[in-house]
Amino acid sequence: MKTSQSYIARIEGAKVRPSSQALERFARATRTRLRLAAVLRRRGELGPNAFVFGTDDGDYVASFKTAWESLLLIANGHDTKRAKPGARVDRARLQQIDLHWHDLRHEGACRLLADGVDIVSSS
Image (cartoon, rainbow, N blue to C red):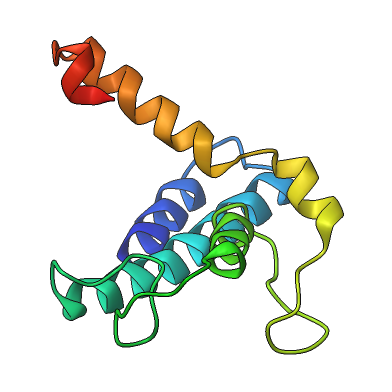
């Protein structure tokens, strides 16, 4: 919250005030960062051998589709409520986000190549 307090202090003394939409975007982004920080902190407590999309204890899960969908929604400021536990989320929201697991794999490989890692090691 320190960041948001310093931001508010800076804008209170400014001659030009941000729009209510800008303040709402900032508030939404702050809430999203706090939610993601809590997830990462919990995963960090499980240690290096825990699965990223594992159980609460970091154990292996055969499919992480629901976890991946939840992560996409949280990272983009959407709610993750489901009709019932284990049910899929709103497909329309996920289509708007348009990010797939393979996209991250491709991005990681491109960054490795840009850093000089040979193509055999990065594939």
